[in-house]
Image (cartoon, rainbow, N blue to C red; front, side, top):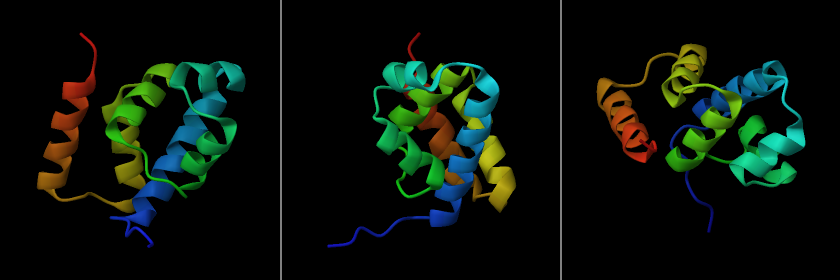
Amino acid sequence: MTRRRYNPEFDRAMGRVIATWRAGSGRPFTELLAEVGVSQQQWHKYESGRDQISTARLVAIAQALGAEPETLLGEARGVIGEPSDKTQVQLVHATRQLRPD
């Protein structure tokens, strides 16, 4: 059974944002993989937009890249246009709940 994705265009935009941040991070790729806890294959699926990124994983990726999750979300939104206010509020609340204090 194929799982329907909410917005593949957003997944691709988020992947491009993450790839840009990774390139600019100056950190070894293997270090990022270990910190986030994903394989190289999985990371490339995220960057290509083939897989959706969970909120918890987005928080881990953002932290490894030295960014705030909201920054990555904002940059991806800018690529495809603004989601509904309800979606934006839900994402911000979910992200804040997952951040360690």
